[in-house]
Image 1 (spheres, rainbow, N blue to C red):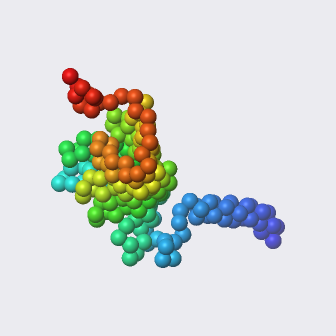
Image 2 (cartoon, one colour; image 1 turned 180 degrees about the vertical axis):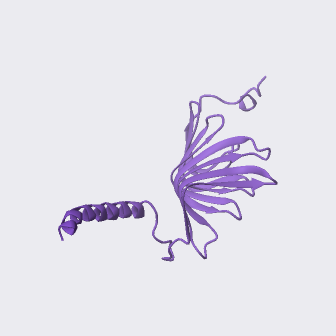
Image 3 (tube, rainbow, N blue to C red; image 1 turned 90 degrees about the vertical axis):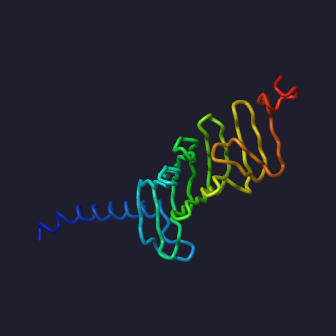
Length: 190
């Protein structure tokens, strides 16, 4: 009986610590998807690699990934993705709070503090975007802010490539441009 009295506070402390740890873990990941289903598979600190014709096209790292039965996509949190061109050369990096990743079609929809930075330092900031690997395009209907050196463009809606070279802002375009590329100058670069 004395043995149980001595162990009881230790056991209670252990149980309390276990319950606190368990509650903290469930707050970091979704308990169910929109249909109310629980994840079939959960991965932590994982990497997904997409390839096209045996050349890497995208490397996606996430702190948490959940795959639900019946879903063709996986849900990820704390997403960090590197994009590569058709030759396997690095082009840009994307970070987002969360998103859906379709491994079969290699499409990704991300949300929350989305930032894409290309290898030359141009930066796109928005709250959501979709990456379509088939056409190598990034699209969003949300507000966007693009910064290149001292140039800043803002507006709503965007269509661009993963290198942020061919940018189309769809509406309410505003900006401050200090440098025009040679081919865009008034005298045609002569």
